[in-house]
Length: 126
Image (cartoon, rainbow, N blue to C red; front, side, top):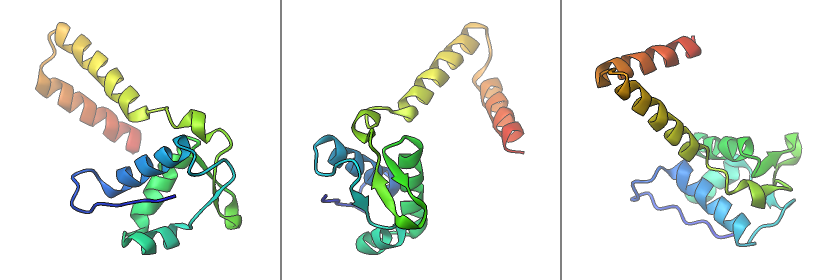
């Protein structure tokens, strides 16, 4: 699997890593059960912060593209190929657009929507 991280790209590094691992799964460069480098090794290989790699791995694991097996390492998930097409960011964006459209039709202002969203997020995080 070849990964190329472009630090000059406007796309966040963790996002580049996620995209390239998903591409490697989809094009067959890696197969279910194949081991991935540890977070520390991946960070060292690409000169990235280990927290950046950990974030990418966490999101890939959430989406069942990879799986962590404790101290044994991180591996490509058995259903990774099917799970690579799931895009939670696109789903969230569409859901938010639908809600915002409904709010605007009801006469809610942009400012009220922003304040409401911020209040809802703060309530969930406390």
